Image (cartoon, rainbow over all chains, first blue to last red):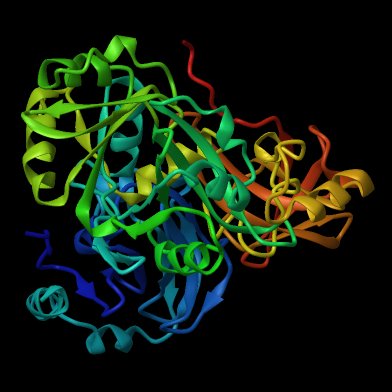
Length: 130
Length: 350
């Protein structure tokens, strides 16, 4: 079973959001990393880049495939996880920790309320894999 | 699971593509390649008939020998690449790609004119299990009555594996030593499980079942063409670096004239190998640029798990085809640097 931490918000594109004040930390879920397989490359935006919710902000590549990643919330990137350049496998081994991708200053923090809860996301992935 | 030429096949098994790839290079990997097509050609004109349809010289084969070759169009382009097995002087077995089996079968039948041969599409009758890697011989030997050390590369013998009658062939698509076992289709599961057990699957150095993704990365590292990528009906054998299977002096065959003319005039574009030198992974179909000008396309691009580099193959004009040539790959709008290198990218140490 995929790990779905209670305290996070989830998108239907399989990203997670951890809210810290005005900031959102974003990564991809355990379910997503498991479907992708070995992550060998992560392409991330630069600090200062601005995105609207649902916009693509980078990509995750396995040996076989490229998957875009979408920001679940709008805002400006304040920092990215530089360590993924050398250790993209952190996305597989620790998707909610060392595998985080970007930190954003949210322009409309209310957007998180429209994301899925852990329970809702779990139901969503169950339905998707059936 | 993905659809592959009408077959449901796993992209990867639980160990994952990288582990499957590495284990095949260091120990052994097992591949269910039963999707490959088999066309049986029997009769006194079997050799002459296949020699007229393929580029390599079938008359050079002895019983128990196999040959890499291609079915060619009159333009010297490729209907399919295949292995020609000489079972006997009046019996050949053609092993073709899954996605092209029906096309090949129609092509072969339609070019049959007068020769004394009986043709049969036997694809559904066979399973094919490939055991590849340095440990392949030691894993397979206890299961078979065929003395494996006596089989040379690109040779085969009839025999039994786990009591099942079939053909044991020292061939493969990984760049490693290894065997491909052809047997009745209903014995696939038995042979698969037996070879996994014999190879101590589940242990750290045991055989791993491998999916399509590892099959692709292994063949790419070994610089082997994949039909639909490096070769198809728009690419000639000479452009694809397959001049070594074009035996222009063997007598007439479909495409011979076009290939001889192209050889005389010189090819305009050529298949090359490259290594990405900046951050990024080249993928199939991406544009190749030199001095901001589009000059070609990537035919296969991927991370190479054993070499730990990002590599690929591409067609470029011959003027840009020398080893060391700097190129750019358009990776979804970002230009990533790469350099042409010698192929195969990987060559096993004997």
